[in-house]
Image 1 (cartoon, one colour):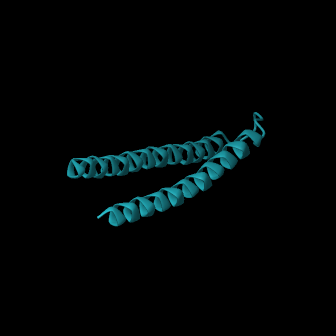
Image 2 (image 1 turned 45 degrees about the horizontal axis):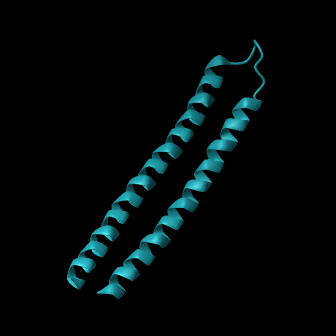
Length: 95
């Protein structure tokens, strides 16, 4: 039983590592989009609708990144609850 729990924890840790890598890629993407948006010249003749559209794209990208962080946090919490439950059960079995 202990091997199964250890294996499950190992798999969860690997999946969290992959999720963290995906989030890092999303963070870089959102960061680059924000830098590009800042670099856009703001002159009076610029198309305000186009600038607003690009701003919305960046805002959606940042929002998506933050939602992904929240999803990762929930996944970590769920998996940690599972691990703690199994450890508590093992302690009870040992008593």
